[in-house]
Length: 365
Image 1 (cartoon, rainbow, N blue to C red):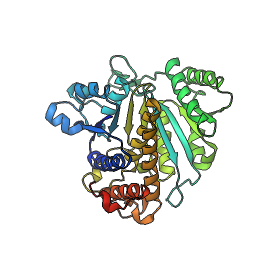
Image 2 (image 1 turned 45 degrees about the horizontal axis):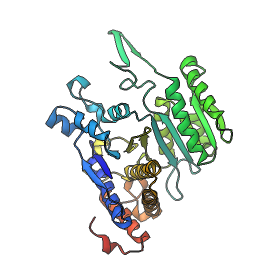
Image 3 (image 1 turned 120 degrees about the vertical axis):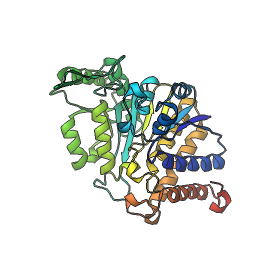
């Protein structure tokens, strides 16, 4: 199984290295073979090759089984014409990764604002207000004169229907409740179209409850009553904002996994940014990327009917949970003292112990 590895910028190489260490231990323990193919993207690629994302990498991404993408500093990139392509946006559009799946869950004993959160935000990933991905050619933003700037919001029936289908399918595997988040009281046409398609999909799933909630109220209810939510489905920008809010409320952005999927392709990606202020200091929490990789394995298991990959995914998740449960093994953002590498080693040790071995037997990581 071939996995493309794109470390990215800032803390990306650090958390990617730890993620690969954990996966290599897991694959040895469970007899699964991965071929990790690392490629350079981001600012280093720009300096060496004149682009933050070469076309050969995108082409390869269409051929591999999965991609693990580290955080990127795209806000620091030059204009697209000068080689500053956002790898995240490019992969989402070129691979048609229309669904961004972001689980948010509080954990006993971990510091959190909300202690009763267990939800998944399903975000449409290729349309909306995002100017770098909502047009066939050109940008979704333009300035007709120096004092006016316009942004186009693209909502299609196809995009709305297929993201709703992902959300309802996921809800059937959880607590059978979907909340459609919108702003149709103001965006009558675009969010009206979104809701029309969500309701049509809901009619095909009579066993799943559909609730509709204005985005303002959704943001407030995530704080006041997070336990009411199971699966939230929404458009691109709302999903981006609400999932960051939910992750922070449930403990930390460093805990939130994120998966980008199409019908054929999958990209695991940390939910947080590149944090250049702590890059190279061994302070980053790698949990988000490790859990994202575990989600990728579970998705591949379902796509390819691979029970071994599902077992591997569950083992990695369980190792993360057992490590986080010990206050002495947490990273600094969670009130602990461990650095990036030490936390990764603790997760790897948890994997080894769960397999009935002593960590000294697997010190190759």
